[in-house]
Length: 483
Image 1 (cartoon, rainbow, N blue to C red):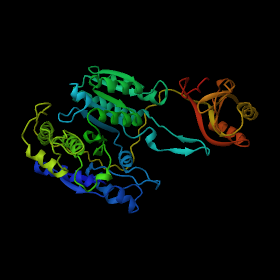
Image 2 (cartoon, rainbow, N blue to C red):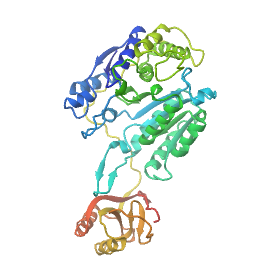
Image 3 (cartoon, rainbow, N blue to C red):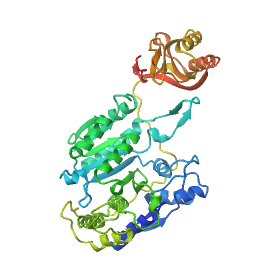
Image 4 (cartoon, one colour):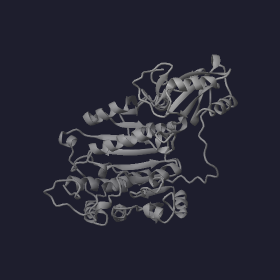
């Protein structure tokens, strides 16, 4: 079986060489095709951080094993890591955080075992990177949460929880504030939960989740979150088990999967052969299990656990009274412990059952559209306008343009209502949201909205526009604070 390998930047080549050396010593039945990705590829003029040949190889093989990669700063290019995940729709980012004996933490010293799997949505949210300057003072980032995308990652999380015989699956969210976006994600969570009655399903507001994770992490099992919140919470969980040096990552898609360490390129220690390869090795073990190479994965992981239990360590962790090993010697120590079992957490060994990598030759982009079951109506529009005037002056101008189909409902500034009621103590910026709704709730069409746009543009620079939609008589837009 062939897989694509990108060694990465900084310490990437050193730790990748160490991991592949361990795989070769264990006779892992894989062949490796090296592909060109990373900062040095950006520097050669490829704006997405990979050569066309690399993209073709990865799409042909379906598996990418990659080292950490750097995105050049100040050149206006997107992260190659995020680009790869989104380009190939690896919608579920799975990160497993477990107590490792030999890696001392507050919790290991207290005898509190940790075994948390974070599943992070990997495609949507603010990671779309869709941003605009609306005025010279106001920046906007668009946050997309979709029903099909949420269903994909949540369904994966429940399937994975069932297979690992999890005792609990928790949805982390901020639906108390972001009622439509996080609200949709939470709605999808409970919709999927109905198909898994054997699993205890619950939800926690994300800030409360963070507090509980650092006080009682042993009470959590599988946690599924949106992209940005999942990124933050997964790094928090890495801190619970010793840091990013022990944080593996699997990016799962229907056609292509990416396995990588969570940590960065550590350019300060590049080329010194002292980096810790554990996170990348754990990511590689996740890849082996994904490919059905269960026996190889168990042998290597048990050797790693035995090595850590024995006090063997690289310079970034472990007992400082015991001399640390460099990257190469650490890998050799693991190889020397093949066949040994740790006292704690030994992994069961099952025979290899090599899986077939999904090999669909797609001719068109898959469309993810759920069935629309209720009638849609346009009932108004939010006009985001630039102005340095006071709310009353803006309202008078807006009302002149309302005509016979619209009424000005309210004006907000940074999400807080400032007209028809508000407070003089609310600080203002030079970008307002003027909300117009139809008279008597009558349906509107896009031509009506365009007509109002043209009229308003005589008085204001219109920075952005959003339709006010309803489905089945239910408002599909948020209210301003104080409205």
